Image (cartoon, rainbow, N blue to C red; front, side, top):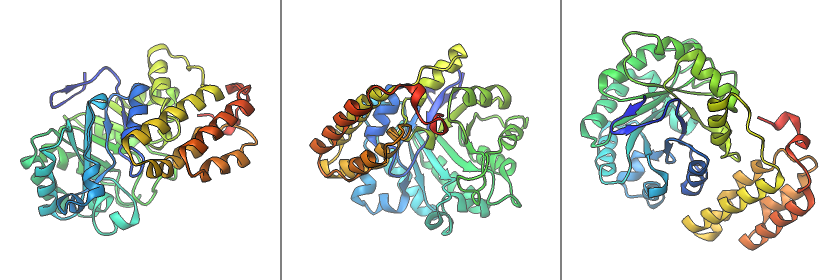
Length: 338
């Protein structure tokens, strides 16, 4: 059974990855509703946190419904990461994760996130400082390497373990691959099969349904899996995966009426946790994907993504149910079923 600090998880646990502008409290609420075993906040800038930047500090808000929950931080200055760790000690988080995997140019090119893969001595110093100052169990998330010519995940895994992290998540792509190309889990298997590696290994990349999740557990023997972009607009993916892992069968996909119900609930939670207008704007990325499977939906999608008030959105959602409610999963666009 996987254990991180005091947190114990079920067999074959399924985690929600930290994603900027995605894994806010309302989205975490929906993912927890459908069975996510561990969730992470949006990743947090160490510099922003120690400057008391309002938007950054807000990301530290934790709610009882979502436990266990982790906070993820990133940065390239050891002193800032240490100070941020001390502040997080006063939060309600259960786990502290270090981001060594974000491929976004503005982060990686200044040496943070996946940029740390080109500076392992700095990665070592930062990890040691965080571990030595954290009251929470520390984990990390990283990638295979900077590019295909510099894959160093075995070395990185050993380094991070020796620094004292209690679990490692590996995204099975390099930084240069971003989110393109097929994730190569053979490198995760190499780490998992390395007798020097004793910490739990969590796999991430190209898991988008129950079958792919089961394959990753069976073939690569990871201790847990982590779902990222596949959950956006589809928080019920956790329920689908868990059902498949338990039964070996696919769970029936939700029809349009259920999708409308989920979208309404997600909107209500977003408004509950945030100022109304901000909630509406930030829900657009989710709405764009909630109904991606419906054919001939372009005009309605545009209305949904340009609506200015929650009342307008609810009217459009009602229209979607009335207009497309007869559509069942068997009528969805096949290329979008995952």
